[in-house]
Length: 495
Image 1 (tube, rainbow, N blue to C red):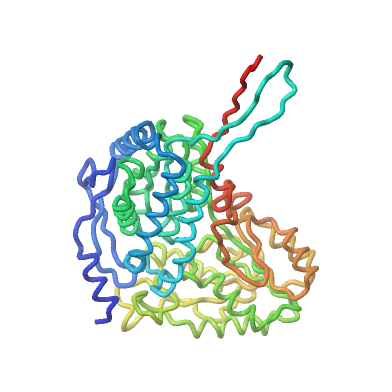
Image 2: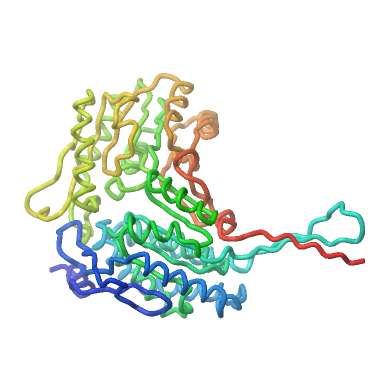
């Protein structure tokens, strides 16, 4: 037994883990539970409450009481100091948090450990922003001696719903700006991966977070998630997940016209120009999809390659894919872990079948990984398809699995039009050694983020989000805090 396996056995033993409402750890109104299983082995890790609308009601009431109670009297300095204590607590327990993520949703431990700079950086960035929130004094043209100014105020109770593919970072991206601005939170994690979020709540309590400021309601999207999105006591809803669910949340939010931020699906293009540095581009373009086994919203799954280098480049990407180590995320050498669930693995397999049926050519992968070491898990080999055309399902639909669709192109004008011919607009990548091409493509691509000669760069100070059906609102940067603030205009007659 490895050290990670021994620690895993001590962390989760199949027992019950309650949710937290108003600072108290509770079983939920009905007592029903959801099983949390390791996607690499199928083993039961723990059970969590299957929350209902009644639990959401209780959590929203607790968040409202905290927002209007002691939390409202916290100064910017005190909120900053709290966030810094939380960051310190996370740093002290970073390996445990990462182990929880690896067990709960399968991300390789080497990858979760490597996220420390991003997550701790986010908490400390929000801590800095907590003391930088301000309004403006604005000259006006109203007759008389009239002072006009603005103040920024927290929107109130925030309902947050996150997916299963990155619980640590996803939680901090929602909770951090809320704490910095003085909001309170009711967070509903994915039923596929709730354990790390509960651990995060425990660490924040230990850091001194007041009761009711953060409430966690575990449960399904159709029950707890839908109730939270529609709740009249929630002032803002923030969601990361599928476009279809985001549309349903936006509709539910119209009841009380709550503020909405959505970070949704993507079908991101990666464009490899004929002058690209192939040696550098191959591993980056491959991992633009294969990272986290393709379970990332920004996956660069449409690989557009200049026709002059298309065959060589796609062959090298396929060769790279064959060399990736697949397995249980607890093994430090693992580079690709499991798909989150049997249901999601079956969905990905549907695309693997559809590719050849529509005329695509399988270059590598294309099947589940089975045999010794893979029993009980949901593993799919990294897959590369050539011969893909724009009308195929492989090129149109978000797969959320380790599947690359390679498409040749002839001109920059053509590839821009094809890259933009999608309802999504979350991210894009460009590989070129020509500065003019880099500028031209990055400006013309319709996406919230464009990476040139790189991919996956996300920093707390830089805004991230989508356009078109990839959502609206931004996470990261000063713009992120504005999503949690209302602007009030104040007029004072000084005559």
